[in-house]
Amino acid sequence: MLQLLQVHTKYGQVEALGGISLEVQEGSLVALLGANGAGKTTTLMSISGILKPSSGKILFRDTDLTQLDTREIVGLGIIQCPEGRRIFGNLSVKENLRMGAIRRKDKRHLDQAFARVFEIFPLLKERMAQAGATLSGGEQQMLAMGRALMAEPHLLLLDEPSLGLAPIIVDKIFEVIQRLKQEGVTILLVEQNAHLALEIADYAYVLEKGRIVLEGSGVSLRANSDLERSYLGEVPEENL
Amino acid sequence: MSAGEYILQQIINAISIGSLYALMAIGLSMVFGILRLINFAHGDLIMVGSYTTVLLLSGGIPFVWASLAGIAASTIMGLLMERLAYRPIRGAPDVAMLLTSFAVTIFLENLAIILFKATSRAFPVPPVLNTVVSFGNLQIASLNIISILLTIILLILLTLFVTKTETGISMRAASQDLVAARLMGINVNRVIAAAFAIGSFMAGVVGILWSAKVGKIDPLMGFNPVLKAFVASVIGGLGSIPSAVLGGYVLGALEILLQGLLPANVVPFRDALVFLILILLLLFRPNGILGSTEKEKI
View: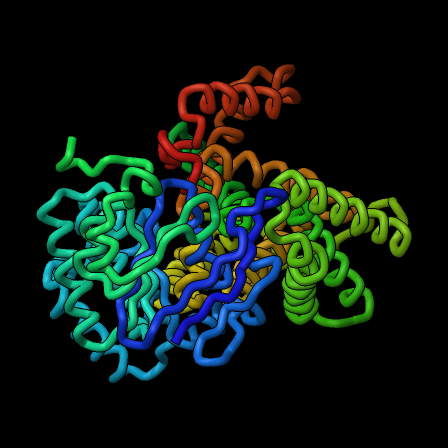
């Protein structure tokens, strides 16, 4: 469904991605792991067209995304839920969700999208009139995901959904991710928490300094003891 | 006139001048909110609108139509500015955008000097904007009443726009987080053009009212209003509509208050005192009255 071929992306003069190739099969959940600054967010921003690769191809069902702008990419059903949530703090929960469905003009369709998001995150319905900024961190993550789901993604790009959240909220978020996968949404998940991601990923890539240094099925990478030591640059909390 | 009436009179003056500052500040602030651009050429939209109006008036067009055409000219010029000057450098460092806005100002002002000469022209004020209405002992210039009423109407319309329409909500979203807005698939070009159009429309309205107040126009007439609008937006907190409006009225009140309280020989230095107060305010609230104290963003 999605294929990156030798993607190079620069931040000014600095090369953030040094030729990345990866593939996401339709209906699968692929994890992108790596330490801070490895290029995970850059990869997602390149797919979404916020950053333009200097060379390489990003193919989505045979369309080269590097030739499209972000709006067109969103129009193809590739929706990103960005790192740090980036909800619109001054907008109400309802307005935030409506922004997620900005491309849906049909009222009935919009109502269905709202109903689905409220079914997944009932809490958002209670908070509908509240400003986004007044939500707790976990609620904001739910709002960010709900906002992404309003667009009914074919491919969901999730950037660090567990970052800075209490374990109980993280569990809830990961339940939702699994549920979405069961419903047929293809997911590319960026995570620093490798253990958590590998538990639910079909396949995973490990990034280091803008290159893919390791890849394999979720099960095989979990068995790989080199993973954290060599590439992730940090020891998971439970091992401390 | 009793003391109460005098105070009421001054309050009306303050609201009236504050309304003009507020309308100007809204345009500056909306654009800044999204693009981080302080568009100093915003003042020249006043000049464009006023000259259009005066030229049409001298061609025998009735005032209502001439001023509507002037407002339309301001709006179109604002859209042209965005399209030709600011869109090509979008994403450049803030300083580059600021310098571009100076370039646009210098270009427009010099173009006006070439076309219309540097000397000022009379702005023929129609009787309806030039009378005094009496309420008992209270005498209020009709221009003040019309300024206040027009501002109220525009503010209501603007509020409806940014809270009820999709483009309006998108505009608020884009001013919070432009990248996130793009990730939603929001048409950022349209939102930015809408912000310019609304701000320029308001500048056009201010242009007519300002010219009627001063009674004459000249190519550099936009400088003072844009400076006041900038001060007003900074007082309120740059980047959001409510703070721009608040800043406009605070500035208006401050000016009228100083005008009334200062001894006659100090009054010419009123603006210097206003800036002094601005500096003091910024020492304690660097992001303006309504601006958040923590982050730079609105």
